[in-house]
Length: 90
Image (cartoon, rainbow, N blue to C red; front, side):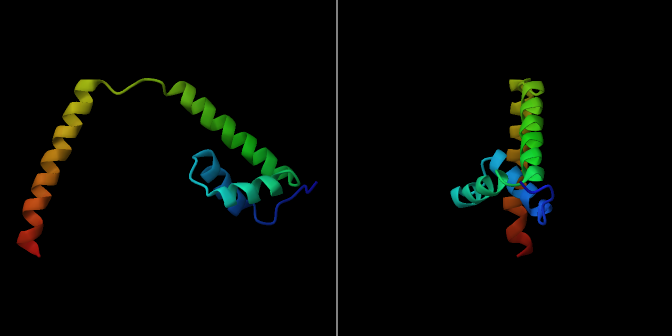
């Protein structure tokens, strides 16, 4: 097993994409094959996975419906203003 990773920065980006479910199946398969032979990649994967789980367990509070409605209304007004102003400047 390798004790150092020549492309650790790139591996960490792939790890984050895998954990966020943004990686392609090919990326994930290639990384998982490499991970079994690379200690830094195993440790990085375990760390990122545990961080994501810890954050998810602490962020269980839902945005209040009233606040969500206010934000949605303001965004709607902003979109209306943009749709009115764009033709004036184009």
